[in-house]
Image 1 (cartoon, rainbow, N blue to C red):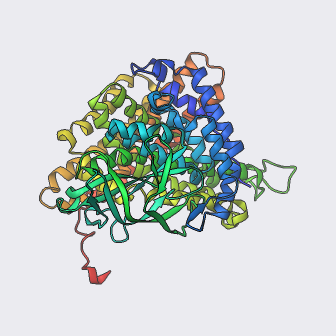
Image 2 (image 1 turned 30 degrees about the horizontal axis):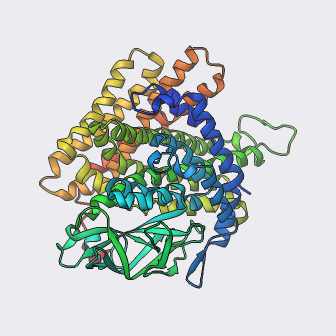
Amino acid sequence: MPIYNAPVKDIQFVLHDLLRVSEQDIPGFEDLDRDFTGAVVEEAGKVATAVLHPLNAVGDREGCVLENGVVRTPTGFKDAFEAMKDGGWTAMDCDPAYGGQGLPYVMHTAAQEPFVSANMAFNMYQGLTHGAYSAIYAHGSDDQKQTYLPKLTTCEWTGTMNLTEPHCGTDLGLMRTKAVPQDDGTYKITGQKIFISAGDHDLASNIIHLVLAKIQGGPDGIKGVSLFIVPKFMVNDDGSLGARNGVSVGKIEEKMGIHGNSTCVMNYDAATGFLLGEAHKGMRAMFTMMNEARLGVGLQGYAQAESAYQNAVAYANDRLQGRAVTGAENPDGPADPLIVHPDIRRNLMDQKSFVEGARAFTYWGAYLIDRAHRNSDKDADGLISLMTPVIKGFLTDKGFEYATAAQQVYGGHGYIEEWGMSQYARDARIAMIYEGANGIQALDLVGRKLALDGGKHVMAFFEMIKSFIKENEGNEALNKDFLVPLKAASEDLQAAGMYFMQNGMKNPNNALSGSYDFMHMMGHVCLGLMWARMAKAAMEALDSGASDTAFYETKIATGRYYMARQLPATGMHLARINTGADTVMALQAANF
């Protein structure tokens, strides 16, 4: 059976050595000292290892079952969900006015990582609820907040987002779900939604669906989309549950992975809905959920890779195969362990250097969200808007790649279900698709985010890299192994942006054909920046006499590997971008 242990020391390194959270001028951060964050992360790790991880294979094997209109979750899920609620894990960064703990979002992110690594499908039930909470918190009326937020905070009620329909996914302007106004100010919602994660289950007494629909007589296309609160059970004035609403489960989708999460077809038959936010402004409200969810999905990408990596390392140290080419390293045994072989080391170093860089990138994104929200910092808001498609797209692409790389370490055993490695690959695969498929993330990055506020935020990002390099170029060890490759990669990224400016206007396909490469190029540069910063932090810790020298030396060596072996991929991506659209668009549709 697979193993999992929360990487508490690595999480603490990012929070304190890299981000220095307790030193930031953000309200609430002054309380995030090492002892406090360590206690939170260690306890989250215990819950992940003891409660959630043993159910991961159970959920994969049993899946969810639709019985008499109600979805039954796998064995043990209900008790585990109660444990999560009792521990207050669902309420960490929620407003104390609604029963939350009021901690910064970066702490929510740090606690979520072990939960996702241990059991991604299970954690989605509370993850979707958190998104619904955020949307109502940002756009709901006072009455809506008082009605729904306290129960969503504790996960006594859970939440969903309902976007996709059978005939439309990304192009939501094509949706057919309609909303008919009623005399009492409510709406009757009719239509079908598909791919609804946690659409129904037996973990909560009510489910609060957030549903996109078009009000009759409204504008055509995406401009006519509104967002509605549609509870599974109506809520009485005193907060008790009333009659069943006109919403039902059509079926549970049979999926490649995340079997423990109920992905449902949802049917709305004149269900009572309540407008959330302004009419015809539903996408604005929905994107409150989507942007938060996209950072969470990026976390899913590397968190699955982290868990798979831990198992691959254990197997590589245990499995005896062949002899080291430089001489036997296990002379008393029949063979040496796999980990002596250079290609296994390469594979594991690819995984390790990605996961640790991705963690830093994601937590930095969460820190920017805190700075944007708690300090009303528009620059931080613009920067995280720029980074969101990169966090989602790059980290999930690579997360899946390295989950399968971990599977590869096992050889044939990795392909056999009893070893459990295939689940990491199957579960990680969905993260590349939902919350906006990664091709859409790339188009969003190049088509919208680069030009956001006149290109202010991408220029600020380049200046951030330039300033970091200039401030630290006197550090010989950092300069040679980290700053020089970071500068080269950053110049590749700027050259790609210049190509888009020079060639994209006359033929937009020149830019869009290179958008996916640009997203990956920017992802590498972001991880390169994270590794340069982490290497500096580790060097400073060693210089100050830190006792755990092996930890910090390993951090530096891992970063050096990323800069030498992974970051040069920016050159390949730039070469592809510079070829433009001609080869991409050369064939007629009939010739594919």
